[in-house]
Length: 131
Image 1 (cartoon, rainbow, N blue to C red):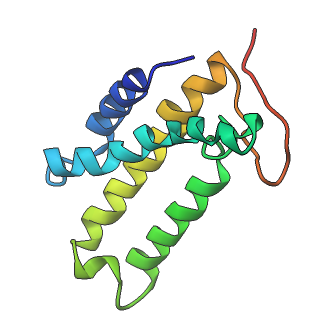
Image 2 (cartoon, rainbow, N blue to C red):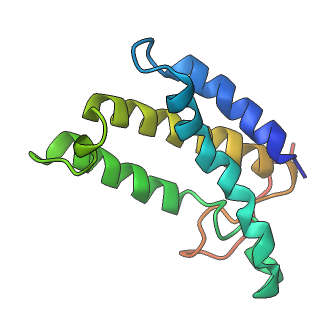
């Protein structure tokens, strides 16, 4: 199993590559990398069911819905909720960098190592990259 430190380190590298210079800061890096670290929280749900680890948060459905809502809020809507707190241009850039980090650093590393339930809750099947 890949360590959370490795997940976060790869996510930092991805965010360093994707965040534009005017958006890149320690604050934006922390905001973009925190969801990758929070993916491993599903390890504590073994009390409910052993199958929830690498299923509950290690799927592509939840991050895709969240990124779609953020993009909709910052790009499509006239009065954005997020723009009350930050510049919408910054929010969408950080959200996209965070999404790519979640997919590749958070889910991708476990997909290639121990397997993930990538389509949960729509389809309950663990997949592992082997070859």
